[in-house]
Image (cartoon, rainbow over all chains, first blue to last red; front, side):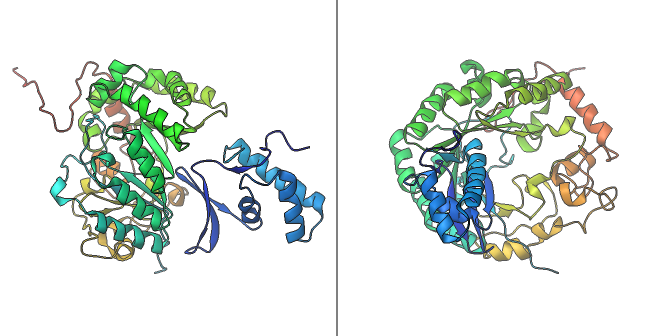
Amino acid sequence: MADPAIPDRPRLAPGVRLRFDKTRGIWVLLCPERVIEAEGPASEILRRCDGTRTLGEIIDELAAVFTADRAVIAQDVTDMLTELATKRILVS
Amino acid sequence: MSPVPAPLGLLAELTHRCPLACPYCSNPLELEDRAAELDTGAWARVFQEAAAMGVLQVHLSGGEPASRRDLVEITAAASHAGLYTNLITSGIGLDAGRLERLQDAGLDHVQLSIQDTDPALADRIAGYDGAHARKQAFAGAVTRLGLALTINVVIHRANIGHLPALVALAASLGAGRVEIAHAQYYGWALRNRDALMPTREQVDRAMEELDRLRDGRLTIDFVVPDYYASRPKPCMGGWGRRSLNVTPSGIVLPCHAAQTIPGLEFWSVRDHALLDIWARSPAFGAFRGTAWMKEPCQSCAFRELDFGGCRCQALAIAGDAAATDPSCDLSPHHAKLRMLAEEAAARSGTPYLYRGRPALTPIPVR
């Protein structure tokens, strides 16, 4: 069962954009008056928050991409998305 | 010298024209004329250059940016350049149709100013009858289109007691974020300091209220009042470090008040490439980094955190733009700043002086 703080099919909130910053060579989340660096696997997670995938589907895909233990991936993804939902960067 | 890191944000002051006349306006005392404004094509070139050098976000501001007939084209140009576009507006002069065209042009976010919760007081602060009602209608149009909305409130003596109601109003208007910013005393606000400065008690109470208001429903960003602070804020995240301003006529500034500092040489996008201005212009070099600092900043453990505070405030109060910002309690002028605040706060009943409006100044007869 998904953490209640995470939307069923999470997507970036209005006013939030994920893009690759060519100058700095990093992925960034552009928010109102804020820029957040999406380090390492964070961008892989955020790219899948498009409102079509469920949390479970996002975890499945990442477990395949990183060929890692699903339980470990699930914990990382849940932690990150919970934090972003709390900050209202993710909505349903 | 190591290469200068790229800026993240660009404030595009598209025009100094504005239907409002707020007594804390951040535009300079000498406003630039419409005839001198950059045209659509020049702004498009600025945005292309900005994106190429690493700018990520552009803040379309003014004056009132909607006073530009080509605002949709300008927004499209910024978005086309790949920039995150933020519109900073009074909400006056933008109907739902134009807002929808802005959204189609790629607008990412809207920041709307609100003066107070009481319509009569709000309109008096803005110097514009009916502004408050129009702003509320505009906020409705923003949220109906699904655009992200921030409400910005400049705080001063007349409205600082209304913080909980202001935050509640922002929430009811559908804002996801509210920005509470104390008036910054340069330019118009410095001229109106006696009419705007809150008392120490008002500020203390406001800080306590803000703590209680942060319940997670709304993101509240808060700019502390310098005159009652003990440490300076890192103005602009450091001079020439994070962002730049382009004035309506194309002059590039490290901060919106930088032209109050005499002797700085500013370059224009009409004569130079933006990257060249950022990296090499004398004004940006003047206070970049820490080498320009005097004591107590030069040997201070905080010098890379607050960069000595605000250069414009150092000039306005200490008479030297390279001095420590007097809002720092290590500044020899700190006590003077506090005294100026208390003197100004005691001058209740001082009328506002509005930009572009005739002033009635009593002449001392004795």
